[in-house]
Structures are given as structure tokens and as C-alpha cells.
Amino acid sequence: MTIAAAQLPTRNDARTMETRARLVDSTIDALIELGFAKTTGVEICRRSGLTRGALNHHFPDFADLLVDTLVELYTRLLAVKAVVDCGRLEAVLRASYERVIQPEFKAVIELWLASQNDPEFGSRLAAAIHENAPLFSPAMVLQLGEGFGVDQGVNQGVNHGVDEEGETLYYTMTETLIGIGLGRAVGRGESLAHEARVLGMLQSMARDYDQTLAKAAKNNPTLVKPQEQT
View 1 (cartoon, helix red, strand yellow):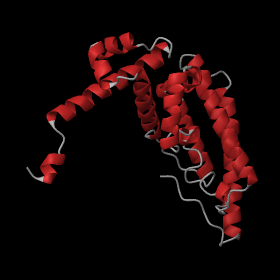
View 2 (view 1 turned 30 degrees about the horizontal axis):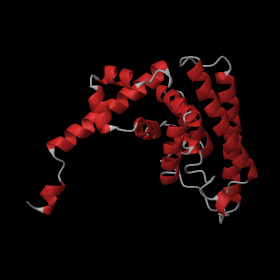
View 3 (view 1 turned 120 degrees about the vertical axis):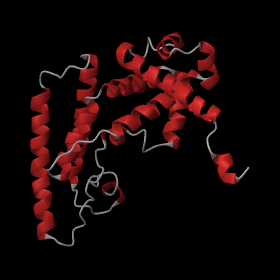
View 4 (view 1 turned 180 degrees about the horizontal axis):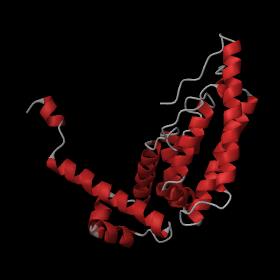
């Protein structure tokens, strides 16, 4: 057997991945529909059509299933993109908003809260956060700062054209969007009564800052521009 052949996934490997994916998918569905308290092993097995023995075989520690679930949720949310033609900060705002209104964001909130109330899960999640710090950052979920410079450069003393005002706007957007996501989670996914007004104000602030940043870059050719969002 060649090395290349030995590295190819076997049928058992594929079956294992499929089974684990079914368990994670069922956990996500339960978190969205029922919340963390009712996302039990019995419920996950019922939804996945698998036995409790299968669950225990693939995830002997229930906390490990929750961590894998959170990783999958982050991966799904980061895959959500918004096609926009506007300034950088406004583009980030729109893309981030599209993420917090996804049903999966409710599941993320459920796990965030659970990690604070469940010592075993909290301990396991803390280790995962340490190992995958960027992935488990709330700002990473929202992708605020990507292509904008905040946290990637400002706090490291690199001039990406983002001043204190831009940094404050960044954190304002982060906290507000997480709040919108939390409000929707409580309201079973329905938009908030004041959501459009709040989003409109954030959008106006982002546009104004984008225009200011563009003028500053035009007047100062040596200013390092942030990378465009991809």
C-alpha cells in the first residue's frame, strides 16, 4: 500500500464523519428550536435517528459535542456573505447584520450562555477558545474589523487609517448587532420593532465615517489603506 493510498479516507472514516455531522446538525436544530436546557442526549438521538450508544461512542463527553457544535455554527455564520457596493465599514455592517439574523446565531447565544452556567462545558469551551482564539471571538463571528483594521492593526500600533472614532464605531456596531441577535433569539426570530431604525442609524454613521476615511486617504497618499473585504 502506498503512502497516498494509506492517507485516503476509508469507508469507516467516512461513516464516522457522517455520523458525527448528523449528531452536530441535530444539536444545532435542537438549540434553535428548544434552547439549551432541552437539548439533551435523548432529544439529539431522536432527531438524528441514532442510538444513545452511537452518541456516547462518538462523543463520550457531552461537552465535546457542544464544542464541535459551536465550531460548526461559527463556520456556517462566517460563510454568510452580503453582496454590497459601498464603503468598507458599511459593507462590514451589512455582512455582520446578515449573520446575526440567521437562526444559527440563536444557537450560538444559547451556547455562550450555557458555557457560563455549566462548569464542565465552560471549562471545555475555555480550552477550545484558548486553542482557537480567532474562531471563538464574537467579533470574528460578526467579522467586524475584517478588512477594516480594527484589532488587526490599531491595537498593535499599525496605522490602517482607523482612528479612535473608527474604533469606537467598530465596538458600537459589535455590541449593537449582538444585542439585535439576542433580541431576535428571545422573539423567536422575528425582527425587533426598533430594528430598522437602529440599523439605519448605524448605516448612516458607517457611511459618514467611510466618506471621512476616503477623504483622508485621498489627501494623504502615504496613508496605509485597509484591505478590501473579501
